[in-house]
Structures are given as structure tokens and as C-alpha cells.
Image 1 (tube, rainbow, N blue to C red):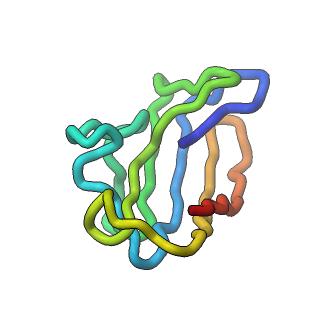
Image 2: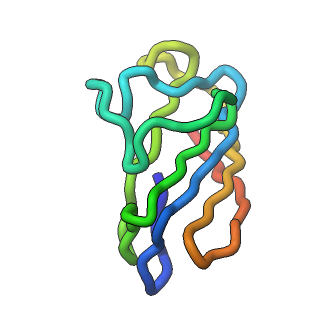
Length: 107
């Protein structure tokens, strides 16, 4: 997910993240029926570091959250990981410096 915790709209958002080992992009999308996230399908050829690049018409309003992509452990969504993971990410938007961070997810 991507959120805008700022006070102004974020235009042309950019998101990239590192998919941890043993995980992959869920081929059936964020809803299980093939729907891609807010910024559509990822761009680039490095499937371990997908990039999502918005256009100037793509806007994230303040205090909103949007799905970007679904990832799964192994090849099936019902597979259950036993450990927590850390996902390194980068985000940016028009007029904003790129920010890097790490998201920790506990299971």
C-alpha cells in the first residue's frame, strides 16, 4: 500500500520495493481476479524490484491509502510464512525528494 500522510496531493507517484526471497507478485492481482493496484502493472524487467510509475494525472490525496501490489509466500496465497519479513522500498512524487525506508511485516 502507498499512503499520503502529507497535507498536499502527491502527483505522479513512484514506488519500488524489493520482494523478499521466497515471495513473488501474486499473479491474480490484489483482489484475486487479476485487478492490479492503483498504479497498474509494474514496469521494468527486474521482477524482484518492481517499479510503479504514475503519470501527472495520477494523484494520491492527503490522508488516503491505495493498494499497489499483492505479494505471496511461495506460489500460493494460502501458504503461510513462519517468519517476519522486511521490505525495502523507495517512494517519490513530483516535487518530492525520493524517500527510502523499510517496512517490517510480522505474521
